[in-house]
Length: 49
Picture 1 (tube, helix red, strand yellow):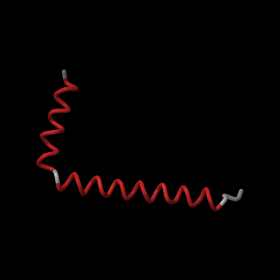
Picture 2 (cartoon, rainbow, N blue to C red):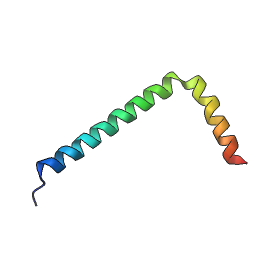
Picture 3 (cartoon, one colour):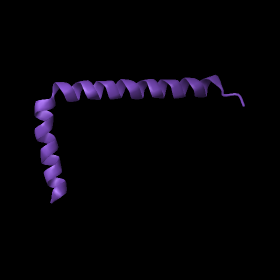
Picture 4 (cartoon, one colour):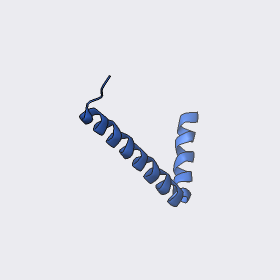
């Protein structure tokens, strides 16, 4: 069962972009931890009610 190069390339690029997005999100979360905590608490409070 052969996989066309286009499909392999698209899957690889999607995985790569996903990893980049994850690393960027983690970096941003670490940098804006102070502001992020308040935002998360507000979100949880809304869900609780």
